[in-house]
Image (cartoon, rainbow, N blue to C red; front, side, top):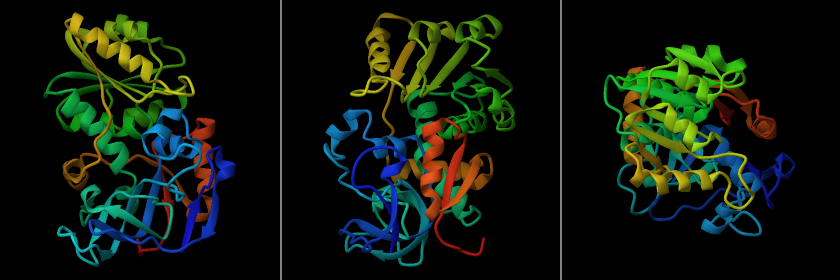
Length: 331
């Protein structure tokens, strides 16, 4: 099969399209013929091996243990392991795989859900990693209730574009923060007010807007003291990821400081790591099937141009979700 592989950590130059053997599956795994896949910030981190912390949690210290790139996947089940009970050959599925930028991939049964019939493979492929992170940030961690005010910082990215739509679908009153070129996109997703981070400091938002019950800060570097000024007295801050930190831990230091401070203030200051489980993907699927959430797919590339797709993340020009089309299903 054709697959996008890497044998060392680095920039997009480490990626190559190669002919390799189809993956073998374990007893609790499914073999998926990939129709579409997607790339995101997590895929970039695994490509570069930075922050180095990810190498210490099982991804390979000197070189990637998994040479095939990609996590998000949507496709058709072609084989199932002996212990698989939720899927049969021919089922259309989406979720998280072990190397999705390939014609075939192996995925744990526990990380897949059935694709809703009305959902395209491209939109399904764009959804799982970013969508469940946004859903968990808002509900399981942020405890969003209908009528609450929500601010999403980093609202034009993969997780942010889902967070804006999901917050609104869950009854929240949503504002967003994004770059100049993406203000219109964020407004179209349902944000009532959109702030340009290039011209409006976080401290200025605190002066212009009523306090927020929930602030979701995605991949930012905003000081916790400024973020707290955006919150109500009992509001919640959820920090999702972090960029441009040191090479070893990335942006995690800010999260640790926030959670350490939380017991001593009235506000809840939290961080979390997304849980990859089919129960969350199925919850997300309900919003996708209803049409309340539509993945913000901004770019599409064929498999042999995956390097160009990843280069967008290197240059910081990616917005929404970027889909890799692997096979033609007639859509």
